[in-house]
Length: 447
Image 1 (spheres, one colour):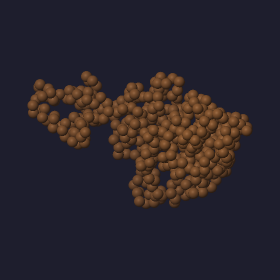
Image 2 (cartoon, one colour; image 1 turned 90 degrees about the vertical axis):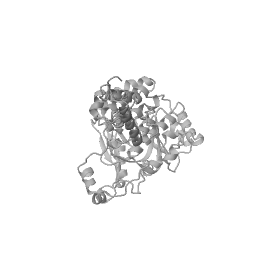
Image 3 (cartoon, helix red, strand yellow; image 1 turned 45 degrees about the horizontal axis):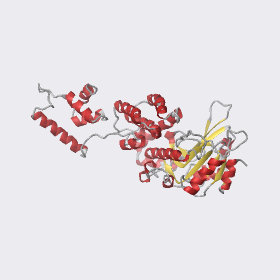
């Protein structure tokens, strides 16, 4: 018996089969995931777990959809592979890509370089001191452990919730991965789309399989997961979006135009304001001015959101984000920021984030974004008074006009930019009542 198993048994953890874990995780038998051969058009649209496996002698790997009625057969296939992963998320489609994520059934964490002593410290911190959330299962994965937190209800992965879940997971990694629980000083931050070696499958150690031990037999909730981290990192359950219970066939009947555009033609979302690229460039500068150690990942994630808002191509976003890696490493050379971190952050390059709020961006990145000065007024009232002031100054022949009677547009833009150092051109145009050509002409002069 190795030290990790011995420690778990001392804490009265019982070894269980892989199917026991996955049955709990995906609520098998309750109809949450699709059965093989099901006609999606005639039923509620459901997502399914998607695994990935690859043998060492192969150049490319394989994706496998897990169906409710053939789950165990598919699992056995992956357990025989040299490398196979699965996570606690279901997907629409055949690949486990972030854009196709449907619901999260559980949050899984990886702790590397774990010994009997450090695992005992974690178990004591979770079960006795209440310093960490209590996992339902601890999985022995070779040189480390995976902690499985199974939700009492699956969480729909709408854009606003994805970001909150990322924030919660990163805060919990900071909390749970420390000098007491791991001998590795370098934490590994895994996104919510991260895959983990399948239970019952092979590990990096020859002849050793991934094994599972039950800690407690009841699921957890989002509120319980957030109890040990600061409130700013918790999931706001009041913002959980309700899922539509319409079947796709019923939606086609009730909303034929939507069905034609979004399902048949696969058109992208429209109707939102596309910002100028200046805003994206501004955020790149803000990262260099204000990014901090524990918010590096989220500042890049917000860069992806600004890229969506500004219509920046994905290849340019990826190039810009990778160019920021050396700067991120300067913040903390002992805690490297890697391309893997970048790729995880860029999962938020999704058109559904086009209206993501500025206040939430500031909260996530811990970079202050100064609001336009309206003196506590609503935008309509602020603009009304600004235009009245403009007319009054015209009547009095003050600075708003040049001596020859021509409006001093350049001065207007210069003064506005001085008062709004982080303002964008669109706000300047609205506040001053000028056209875009005028703003473009004077934007970079005398600032």
